[in-house]
Image (cartoon, rainbow, N blue to C red; front, top):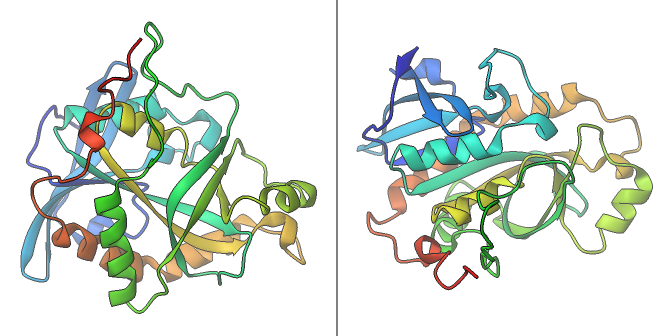
Amino acid sequence: MHSLKQHDIDFVVIGGVGFDTDDFDFEDYEVNTSFGDVAIRTGSVVHRNKTLGLAIIQRHSNIETLEKIHFPPHRLNYRAIIQAVKILGVQRVIAVNSVGTMGSHQPGSFLVPDDFIDLTRSRPNTFFNSETVHVDMTQPYCPEIREKLLNALSANHFKPYSGVYICTEGPRFETAAEIRMLSSFGDVVGMTGLPEVVLARELGLCYASLCIITNRAAGLCEKKLTADEVIEILDDKQASLRSILLDTMISLSYHRQCKCSTSTQGACI
């Protein structure tokens, strides 16, 4: 694996679902961060006659050992992943998250979160442990990327759902009682969206999430939910995911017009 600190990359996709990098001329690199090493795959992708420099970070295989094992959500090295994006000099990140729906969304549909509720417990969730920094999260996801994601969903013949993402600790699925409670103030539930979005905001990055709805939330299922069902939906929607993500990327202007980069201004005590 090569060593990499900076590269000509326009966007980072965290999660990597929807991109079989074997389809492209991508190379493996290693980014050294304060929190551990992060493996990435990077290269060029041509989409609708435009060329994008793209990096893929598979969050479930990125911890200190870089072993090829699917690590559970509560053990992921979120700080290393987000710091790696900053080291690469990339300003925009799109995360892909698989979720269960607590509403009427059909499995195989997509949702772009506009807010979140964090119910995680044991994850390091800030870069600021030696100073007090109250980062504003009134609008936690980059509005520019969100708008383009919703437009890309419509262009790809999907209903452009928005809603509240609830992140639970995992790795177990939720109970029926938990889902009844969570459904009163959220739309989808997952295990990987936090603290990623907060860490990205702390570093002034533009971050948005594209959630693929793989199932009804565990507590609403009439039968036992299995991981195989989730993987089946993910595999079936890879082509759609790729098209939505790439359409979003090429539609964004080069210069950011949002306020994500100024997130820590006035936040320090």
